[in-house]
Length: 112
Image (cartoon, rainbow, N blue to C red):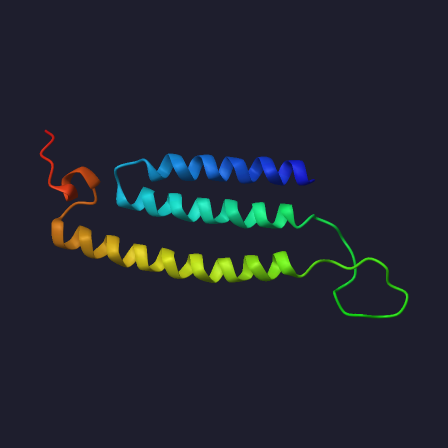
């Protein structure tokens, strides 16, 4: 199962980097979202996908799940949501003011 999750995280990283290298602002924002989701899966995979009891001390239970990867992923989801919403607002304002979402035209380079 860890192998499948690692491959899926790699695919998310790959498509995220591909989208980051595009010229449209919306694709760049989608790329950052994909990279953050790939990081979430990577953290979950490195925390070992084992099943066990909740991390509450009780008698007769030998195997507990590790709550640290889940807490890190929850924090990362909140941070990535904030960053994505900020990027969406900035892209919306830039496209409204400049009339385009093309990065080459926003830089001021005249490629025609």
